[in-house]
Image (cartoon, rainbow, N blue to C red):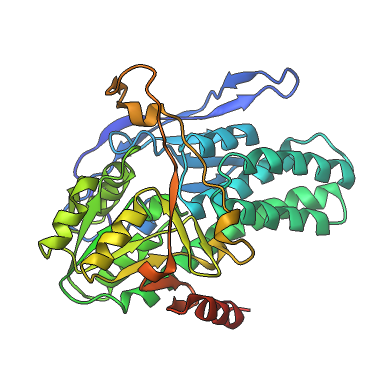
Length: 392
């Protein structure tokens, strides 16, 4: 259990609510004071203490990850437009967490709609689905989560049933995410040895899922199996998910972690500091091509150069079995993420910026892809198909 070393109160603010009649945003009147929890010497399990997103009292409550690591702030949303903004602006991020957040947002849309009949409600939800999907189109979990909710809505007999069942389904998806991550962790832990030093890029932990994590879930499961491990986390420019989120999580969980600049990946590998690499994914194709946070391809290339195993951890919901690499559109983020740090300008005015959110790692650089159904290994098209067949 957690050891609370300091009882430092800080404000946990609510989100925004729209006036149903006027359509204007008004500040949510609810706010909460909670205690900041600092990890002490006792072993902690982050999946029991950090819940990235959940449904409470017909509202979506999530950790505002833009405030980490300085503050642990929860926001509360009762309007699906605000959930869409949260996904777009990285208040919530990570493929599994985005999928569940999208499902919760669509459930909110069902509650917000004034439609009394099934046809009108499904139509309103379809419009909300489009708005939510457009926030992060590369992350396949978002489309998966939205379609799962729409499927439930279409199958219901009337509007009242839709409103009840989509909330139930979204909550079920959140619980399933935790169970899936823990199964994935158990499969992956068998690939890592005692005294391994594991490099990871970006954040694929509890903060990228509902709880526990994908890549960091494997790391947690490895430690829980009794093995001693260390972690090297890249800072992950330009939004610093590695330094702000992964380092925060691992320290919170009592795991030995060292932070390096992205430019030191080759140095760390060349000097024998890395045993294995594990990352998460935002999309995995049936061919084994992996789309993940920008910089993943560079890490994989350096791992191949130095003979270091490179693993990907992703639930089956992250797999896209229909698309080919030429079909995938990689979103471009705003230039200000690159031209400044923490509100301070670090580049000339009017400089051109190329800021892709993701890159593609080809299958020949990947040792294995860890899922809740087992581990896919080359040739991936064959092994991925077997995993899906076994999971039916």
